[in-house]
Length: 447
Image (cartoon, rainbow, N blue to C red; front, side, top):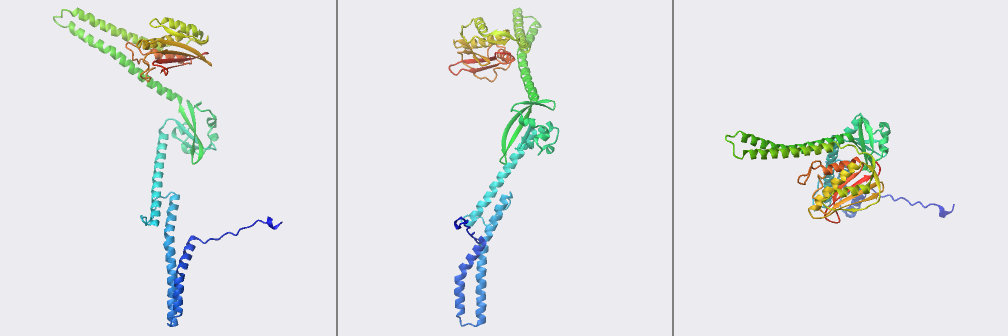
């Protein structure tokens, strides 16, 4: 092997430790003075014993001064080392002494103490946030699972443990395969599973904990959500029914009391027969209105399932447009297409939408137009009006809610019910190209 091929090994420099460097610097700093003192002592005419005693005193003072300088430098450094180590291991209770402004060493101690306070407050906030999250997880009714990259369970709340019929402590650190729920991790998002006698919907997301990605599974009891929505809908319906019935019964009761008082008066007024007739007319009118309201409710509640027949869209639109006589309906002819549905129910749906559009357009002397087009497997019908538009869309499809004088509040609710029964969708929004409203009805071509 050539000499040039031999790797050159550089000698490693051996540096003295910092405390040794401080000690050596202190000794060397005092060396000139000690040497001069010893030189003068050597040429002194004093006795040998005295010179030896003085020389020993000089050496002791020299060494003592060097050690004092070393201790003065190293003690604060060791204190700061202990403080930093305590902060590293999470102990924020220690504080450094001598922290004061105007002194470089004191200012450094001030910063270390402030760092400890800051980290302590952050750890306290993190612990409180973690405790709050755990309390929330325990109180929610949804089942929550968190798996690490190895599909081991790292987090589960009480609802999740109940779903697996175990305690959280018995489930943690076990793999999804051991728990028999590995197919949950493979299931697509928003899919549904059957478990514990219920139907659960899976929601999946990814988060990081300690820099490691985890997969979060949230399972919601679909039947419970549906039951809650049904309960809320029933409460709203009862409130509406109570409001409408009371609005009719209150005047009937008041007029009935007035009529009874009139009949018991002696002598009766000259026009008492006219008052009786007028009161009975009001009672009959309110009773008739209440009857219409209840009939409309029964009609909406007893909507039969749609029949599956071939419906020609062109003929359906033309027929409905001709039924409206208050305003001419502008029909923009679309493609010749047929869909499967109930012609009678779809006709009633379009009649309701066109009637609402004409009511809105009549206020501004505007017009109403209807058009349709084919979108892949759906037929899209649009009914536009030149009215004032929607002030709010919050209660558009709430049954029996109406802003029109004499309205029943079931037209749009019934229309949406018919659309959804056909597998379609009905939306009502303000126009973006002009003032007015547009109703969009999307219906599948096939049942």
